[in-house]
Length: 192
Image (cartoon, rainbow, N blue to C red; front, top):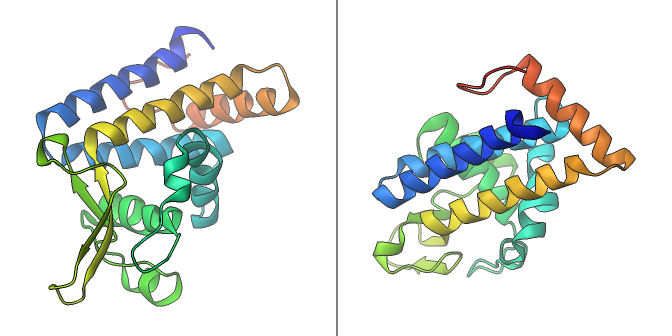
């Protein structure tokens, strides 16, 4: 795929790293939006809730197995659902860590099921955080910005490695990627 596409995405990952080092919350919004775009280029079309969760499971959870194995204090193992409802929908679409009413009512979205932190806080990435004193109680997965960005980088590398394969799947992925980017070029991308 050459400079064009891969280098563009690697440069965005470097920008995410810079945001993470600054210690502000913008990195989570940008990384979540970035993941959503990766899901769309993998699929070659707009993602549904199911497609997005499948992308997380087939890419992020595959290259970073700690996500797949994460279990909430309550016993739930639904991190892909919470990433969809809190990171994708909550942060990207509502600028909040709260799931929208429909997500809570029909799809298991839970408010504050993901807690955002930076390494300077002393929190551990994908640790379980529970606060019984709040109403309702908080049962969250801790996302540490610097580690989350490292994982987004691994997903990016894996996606492009798959697209370079000479198999039917690789050629299909490359085609999806190029078609989506032609229809919806990412911010600041020189078109090929």
